[in-house]
Image (cartoon, rainbow, N blue to C red; front, side, top):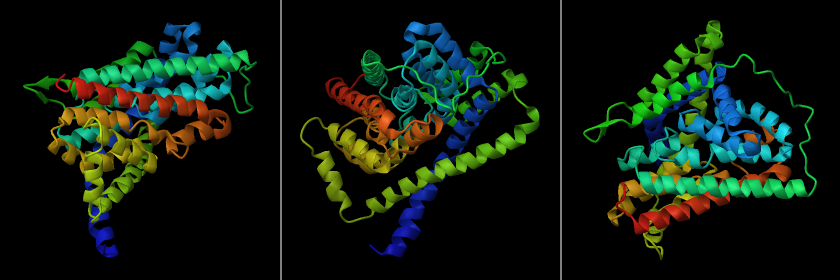
Length: 394
């Protein structure tokens, strides 16, 4: 390939196309997350869910709280940072070894909740853009597969903690840990309203078509958060928060654009058709090749969204030509992107494990691996099986 042509046209073409198609989606999601952060809305929702489940279910309450926030449109980083202080309190009260906090947070933020039908997370949006599907694509099989992930991951997490506690493990606070008074948090039910409105609005259909664009629905949730929880924020900093939202959006989308642009160069190579043909003609169920291709690419990229941004436009048309429905591809590829993306070099894993939780990979990564790599891999196999046996379910 001519290097200049590859960079100037293939790479930059893929970069700007992804930026153009997704900038407002990233901006809306970042704005929602920022508003939930500055109003303590995310923290209030998490606190309410954890209190409702009770101390005996303390371990699973953390990923469930993260999952609810993600399903409502809050970004995984905001959800993790909001829930972490609560996780510290919960783990201390239940005497759960501290090194399992990253696993609980990552399980809730980077597995079932970001790929379940209906969620406004970018991992669910990218396939819809390239395959012409909606966010509810593969509803029944998708919900079952994500439920398997939730149940299996919870069992694994419980057993790992139980084994650790039998071996003498306890919660040991670190010098950086602080335990805050949350007396001035908003009402959790009121904070939940914008998330519900966001989810309902972007999934309402008339004559089979969504009436509210994804960006508009998420911005609506952001505006409602601002209105309903206004007294819990400093209105004098609204412009500062907006500026930070824009800067964060540019950084986040540029990272994904760079990965997707690399895929555009790959597509232009002479070897690309050979690779696609090998994937499409793998032995076993037809859709298996799409799942394997997606999870491998996501693993190489260290990013589920980046992997989907490459895999969906490159592999999607080839598998659809083989007779696989767009909705089955959408859900299977989305779920498959959640497995190998969580290898140790993933930016989110590094941030949560090292920066947020002050744990080392040596102490904390293996629990993370079992709930964010192994568990979604099993969920992917379940999705492949379901879409092979029941391809025509809604």
